[in-house]
Length: 122
Length: 213
Image (cartoon, rainbow over the protein chains, first blue to last red):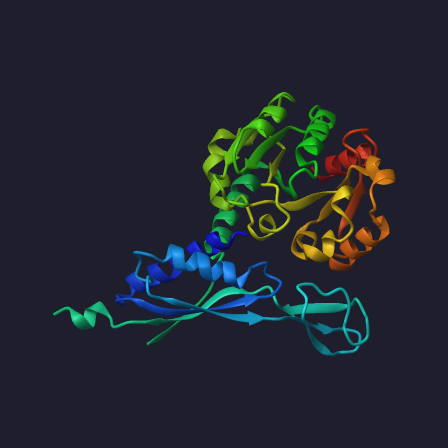
């Protein structure tokens, strides 16, 4: 529901970085979004495409790597992944003694940038 | 050309939240981020809590709503300092909105600030505002399926207040399933059952809250 805030946050980070390091434009940006992070990828893509206008990222494509929720069971020592956005017990042995290891990510991994202005300018 | 970024998207908010937290800590103010869906009874719980505790704890309130000042006016009648934030469409409060209204809060004269977040079961759970604790209100009429449908808020909250228990005879809610699922998501979750309308269970909640300060 707050994908617009998330999109604006992403644009702040990548545009600042693009300008500070003298790149000309951003062609794509890759994110890692956990399935339990509460983000709808479609809504984020839509918000990003609206918010990127008239910024160095205006032609940037957003690539979202979706990370399933997963953890490690302390009872049966099995690593697991689930389809849902929550986990109540270890899918193998049913124990509630587990540690969540992934699925809450919300991070920018990398971006693909165009030529630097330093290269273009005399 | 690929450039490594490796930055948490909400890093800027988390940094601001930490600044707010420092200011609260310096002033000796305990801050609660109160969350829940629209109509769960967040403002009613606040009113009852303030009336019960205001002679023992100096409470201030920050009200977050998309629009309107109804909630701030309700809190104002209890006689405690209150500031209204209108998010103008945003579905949650963030750390920046809180830091902007802090000058209007008499921090030095307060023991506790309760931030009433925008009515929403999803987004407020993700944005820290500088709180010491997240609390959530769920009215039992919302149904026992809510923990598994909105797991993040149940996971993030330290305390769950189940409101409107006076409606139990009239709604099809499985209280045991509701509580079991909430505890499964968050084994340390403290649960109170109250009715802001009849006053049932409120004393246990306010005494617990009083003990935090």
